[in-house]
Amino acid sequence: MSNTVPLVWLPGLLCTHDLYGDVNDLLPNWVEPNCIELPVLNSMQQLAKHVLETLPPKFVLGGLSMGGILCFEVFKQAPERVLGLVLLDTIATDETEDISDKRDAIVRKAEAGQFNRITRDVLLPMLVHPTRATDEALVSRLEEMANEVGLEAFKAHARALATRPNAIPMLENVQVPTIVVTGKQDLLCPLNHHLEIVKHLSDVSLHVIPNCGHLATLEAPATVANLMSDWFAHHQRRFV
Image (cartoon, rainbow, N blue to C red; front, side, top):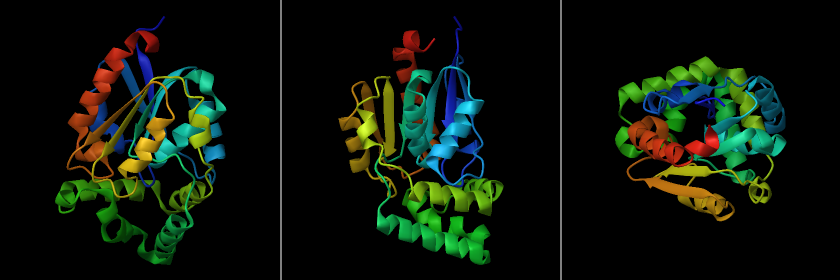
């Protein structure tokens, strides 16, 4: 039996592996993190199928925001391969019409030639705690990730989010250890959504980070890493 466990990260919308880099550097050395680059596919079912074709036989699965949403679909398709779940700043319900309309408006701005500006001009107030909105290093990282993902993937993944299934019914089938972490000031996936997720899971811990918005791995990486490290240590025998 291996003495290490693969940790597979799924990126959030307009995000790359850099979303998790600061946390990865602080995790135990027996945890082997890897972030999957998502293709230009416009449904969660297709994305999950692609992801599963690239992964080891068994792994701990994690994701923030859209990454967490995709975790639910991956688990639904191959529950026997998932050793544990790391769910950060995410949501399990299907899309509301109001959210779809707002995201569609952002997509239209991007298609109209404003893609390079949407992170700073439109998304930033929803993504980070107000005290971090003027953190130029952080904002630049967000813009770099968005530019690396590109417009076509943004449009496809926005469609995947809009048409995603409600994952709440399948949560009763999740029997693996799960850690749920959110920023207290997360505006995109507020605390009540995490409470709803936790309510349906049997082996779960919930952690709320104060003075933190939607991007906990970038805003409070040491806190996230400490919480995850304790969780991994507690379940080490099950994972390796």
